Image (cartoon, rainbow, N blue to C red; front, side, top):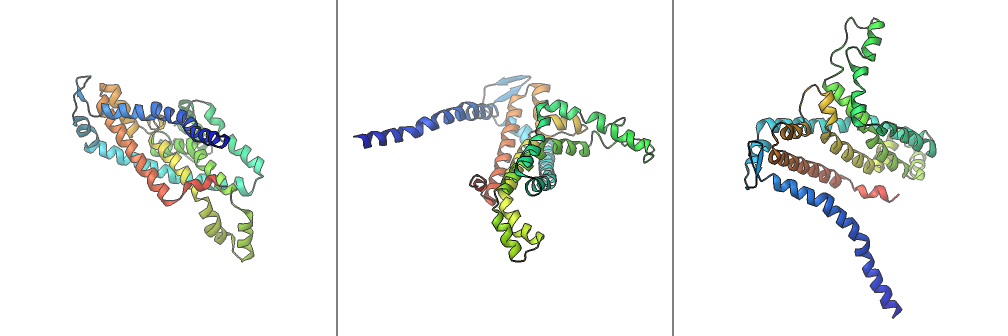
Amino acid sequence: MASSLRTRLEQAETPLLVGPTLLWFVIFLLFPLGVILYYSFLTYSSFNVIHEFTLEAWQVSVFDETVYNVFIRTLTIGVAVTILTLVFGYPLAYFLRFYMGQTSGIVLLLFLVIPFWTSSVIRTLGWYPILGRTGVINKVLLNLGVLQEPLSWLLFSPFSQVVGYIQNYVVFMAAPIYISLAQIDPDLLDASETLRGNPIATFRYVTWPLSLPGVIIGSIFVFVLSIGNFTIPQFLSGGESTITTLIYLTVNSGLNYPAAAALSITLLVVIFIFVIGLTRIVDITEISRG
């Protein structure tokens, strides 16, 4: 009797625990996505949305050559930012893991989160007095006699855009890499040294493979956040559109919700393809087994 009661309680425990999460998932993710998908098949006419199903929104937005070029630019930016944050984030995580104590490494990593206590708009606009023609960098270089006139490409250019992305997202790359590096068994590194493996060989055959789950998770974070960012391309790019700014303009200039919905769904599909592709390369669940 007691055994059967315990069994029934255990069987009821799973839906009770999963239920709230599943309900939250349906209400705040699946339902909004369903509404967006529904709107992408509606008809748009003169600032109005007509509830008649059509493929017009997809034809005039997603399959337009101009939009295609914007998609290519957005994906190029996403890949470039991901690679650059990996270049900066991996050495940072490596230094914090192997050259700092565990407590001090975590504390220093948390310091990278401090800028996120302010608005993303403030963090982005904060580059104006640094990179502008009358900004700090140009003034210093002019006073030192290095330049005869201020550099104009520091701001409102691909350079300033990349700087903004790196400043915002390097912590999202470094944190999961640090977690992966922290889970590496020191005995494996000692074994490599015992077998006369030099530091380069140890990194190539031990450290790097074992840190790949963190690299993949960081890459997913940075890619998804960068191609979905609106503030940086709006204020630092100098007018070059990305998909997010195009979605904003589509709604703001003509209230064309069907076209904006079609672009949003397409962007979501691209993100899913990227995430699935990376997770097929490395099993990211290994990061939780340390």
